[in-house]
Image 1 (spheres, rainbow, N blue to C red):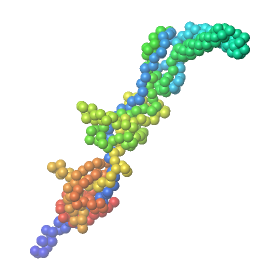
Image 2: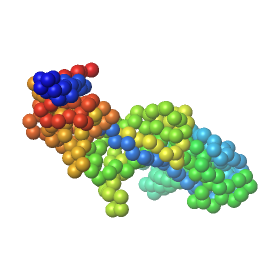
Image 3: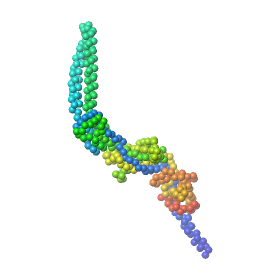
Image 4: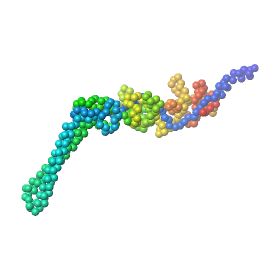
Length: 347
């Protein structure tokens, strides 16, 4: 009777001692932490386009929302008077060319005659002076012609880069003063994503950091990019640093002003190897500390750990007396006690 009672008493403990738990080995490898942040899609360039000369708007080539390529004519001012002045200068230039050709002919003749003393020195010098004067006059008219040509070209407003007309401030028949805005041109490809990096991650984010971007307008579409630059100046209110990256937008589907969901991949293959365990292996205690349960010789042992980076699957840890390859319990570790006998099952 006593033997049966003793066996009955020990049966529950034996069942518990032989419980099965799932376990995974401690890894030593670089870990990638995914840092989710919110950002904004912006255009790298907004330009208020203005004319460089005064004039009456004669024709409009674009409207609000139109796509334009670099060099496209956006509007034309009335240039009739400028064209007439250009024609007048061309006629004067032709006249000056004839006068110069004649002066050069007489000067060349004087150079031959002066050798044989068949012309006086004063006549010879006069011919040379006339040649120089007509040549200077011809150069001056060439400069005036080029200047007038530039003025004529400025009667047409061209797109300095490709983009979309975001604002239109004039219409046909209006008088434009030089410097008054006519259009706002918005660059659409590439676009820029800006995001604020918390201070604690400043040293880990830099040019080349991988980024995955999604926008609400296109759910499920992931844009892969890399950080282009981090501005080394923190906001005093937010204690965060501005990072930006450019993304292609050749189809113009994205637009400035959209919100962006940004996930930065920190660490990776180029970072130092660290001890890591599955996230389910971490047991949090009421005092805020963390432990993992290690299976050694079929018995469980808790080891205090410090937690570092994490991603969806793994957590970086540091702990004394914990080595690569040891088994840590990932399922069933909530009710373990030190020295408990278990059977570890690996996936």
